[in-house]
Length: 376
Image (tube, rainbow, N blue to C red; front, side):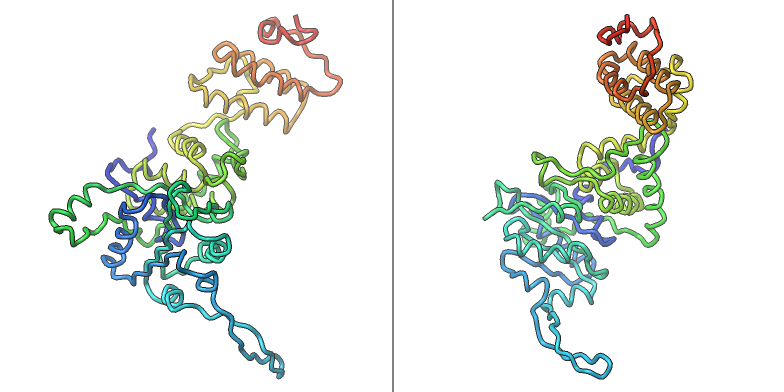
């Protein structure tokens, strides 16, 4: 059964960029100069009758974002105390108090200090303001400075897609003067109800009692070679559920849903999660352990590996000699259709063998376990 929460509409250019800011989550788009990022967001503000605020970070100091210090007297229990308060720039005040659209531009062309000041803005954008960010990849940015991991984890990070048809429309019908209004999906009130579905699915994907669960994806920091890419944490999974809920209410297609998911938790994990949403029937590892020699293994290598890893994880959580032996028989079943996978996990199973247990002799496992001492 296909996931009913995914639309079949096709042309939805940059929807993954345009949806999250409407529910209070900043999106960051990577893209080269001159491809319409700024003009699209400016036109969006005009079309929605919102104040347009562009904040080019290279022209800003950290104080421009966080505020400038000023003295203030406060009274506590009758005593006057002098303290420092932060005075904001006009554009920051207007962003908080007026319906507005803000583009924080050239994000990858500023110092660590300026990025750090912007971090607080990314973490809690004003409820009245749709906040977008944009910047160039390191090989294209002037004085390029990569985004820090905490910054990445607070945003949906996507690649900007060039809308050629809109450019042609502006050059012909608009005579190169009028930039056409972008196709923007407006998130309706009540999107939170749909987000509840995805919140449930996220927890099922991570911690459900079935073979597709992936608890190892709950919190997974980037390796050195993956620095700068989205990665899963409690924050990014929560933002993902909210954003997919919002995307569903406007009929986003699977490509958009996948781009949003990838922007929060990384491309590989996003693919696995979207595939999980398509599954209508889950298999409990305990069912596999109860009758390990009658299991019908799936053809998919990825799904087969999920079966095996979930069974071994369940055995490790509740280790008995009987369950360990059943896991051996289960690997023997896996070996018939996916021998490489069975051999890959066999050593892990033997590492958790109960102390003092003498393995039983199973002729059906002889070929798979031929390298094991005492198994003939």
